[in-house]
Image (tube, rainbow, N blue to C red; front, side):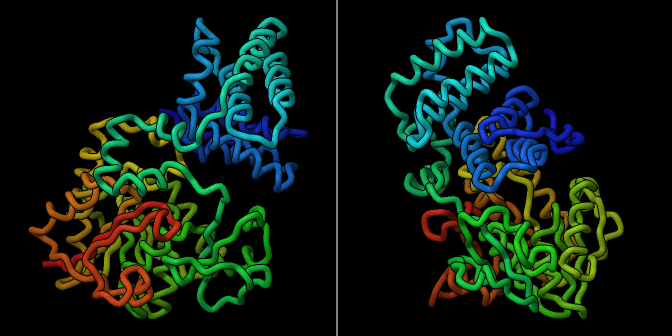
Length: 438
């Protein structure tokens, strides 16, 4: 499998269109098995002259096509009996078919012409004629129904597992996104609130969140360079808050990644506390260090470490440990639809076993009576409740110790495990469980 994020960005492409960006990103996914977010990011970076509205359209075309790709392929297949083995032609036809069958604001003739011109430029007049014939027939078909088309992208075993784990309504909410794209921001403690965020909505899961839509890339707005906020999905904020870090404590973020959660933990413990951040991928830790510099926070102790191999030189005196473990990512399907095509029926159990190994290893770094919070951006029971049961020989389930998340459970006592997701909180799907070391 190719990770396109590890490749050097290609040269800048002047005069690129929103549709062209979507097509090129889709080619990366089809040809290189690239991750969608990385592929789109590279193409948007190449096309820095695009206005915000065109960048938003490119994102919609790309992810919309990915979300109903199976349904689009089913419409195209009878019209291309020899198959669509040429990924350039296939990408052009898929994006055009999405425009024709799922969108109303783009005229059919414009969608067809743009695709035909793209195929002609890449493959010549004869293939362009084929594309023209196919798309004119596609344009005569009935529109796709969003929910039904999105479900076609989900393998039967995965849809069954989703419904069994969270119910039919939540499963559909995880698959089909809301029409309006909302971006989550996390306000950084002690920083002035940028004026453009004064009227923004506060999220339902994280009291530190602000939700914006239609504002373009927030990283280009007032306050970002000064470290006033972090671009972070609201559910991810809630997971970091769930650890309940207190001023002066020693904290380990065992699967820190690029450090968005880690920076929140550093805010919480303050200058008298200490944070360690580990991850198996050094490149992610490089991004973590850059984020700390932007936020003007004291950097954590950083280690590149595979917890399934050993504990390295990480000490065993932490008050709290966060294990935001590798998982299937099924809680993010509405934003990352390509995940569905990557998963096999055996993957949830395999990933759950991996997460268990990490939990058991990281738990040895806790002081006696210390707290561990396990979390995944999956909603599948095999990766969530099943793991909780297996680790109770070394960890005792304990109520969450986090007043900031009181809104999640209201007047009731804090639970020892919770789920959040799009139906109730408007977030991605997450599971978290709290333990004390036995």
